[in-house]
Length: 461
Image (cartoon, rainbow, N blue to C red):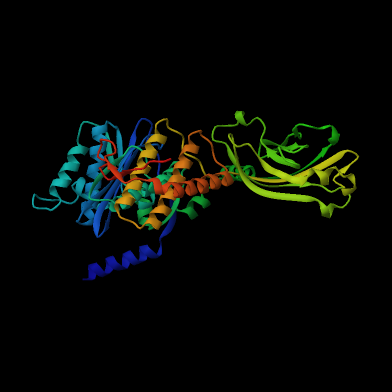
């Protein structure tokens, strides 16, 4: 009894001294694949797994409803399905990660089992795959590093019993995949003993151990990540300008920017003014910057009557120009008594704050778009098979078509601006809702790799 009490006290002390660490999923070594698996329990047991390559790209995955059972059944069954998928597909060498310590203890024989043990055959089957003639490693990770597999396991519980395989990511895990590939971190509190065992460093310790050199590098990076400039542009001989006209270049965060005007309007009867990134095709691949900026048409007689508009936009290689189609009416501008043009000179001011974009869009893979569409149509079928009421299905289908639109937009490797992203998503949602009435419930089998005969074929038009 005394021993148990000491163990309890030790556990309580460890809990009080927990420190926060930031955890993230990591890509496998070059030439390797990584399998993440997870199990879940909610009345029934489910499992899910994803296999990714050295770049973090999805190469295969599954979601399963295993019926009734215990949590350990879900963990081991998910691991078995994942190993089976990797072995049969030739995805090797392979790193395997699970957040179930107990499953690992069974597989490395830390917990002995005999033939009467309820999981005996499942454990031996997993061990048989691990011992095949391939390079395969197994390790434990925390659930914060296993989010995609967790979402697939929960997704499996929404489907009929069985295992469903996906050649492209289904909707529930798309955003999590992007987060993993971008190095997104999630916090977790861990005891010092666990950190020491895993060779981790707490946030506080890592901050205190930074060298002066690294601090200077960070400060330099912050200056590049968040910089602002006020640029004043005197446009001389305004009446002689007809086509679009660029300002001289100014520098923010080591990159060039400039202002663009259409003196006669960009297909409108207003002065059109934009912020522009010159030579965008020469920028580094994946370059993107958030810009919070305002553009002002200065009133040279009464500054308080100046016209200012502001906005926020995500600039990228493929979306290097953004601003205001209608800053000021030309009829107002051309009347010199109004003070916007004096001695044939117009003044434009730009206040621009720029920070580095934290989000990164997944790199395009040639076959992933069509495969994603098929996976999404399967997801629609799953919703329909649950006999949801029409209003709920209408909302869900609109959301799904919105995701489809975003996937198509990603095909061009573009990093979408926040406004364009919202417009694309909103428009696709409305379109999906309008077309739901033409969706015919003809059931069909999707693919031949176990996706199942639960999908609904949707006809548009």
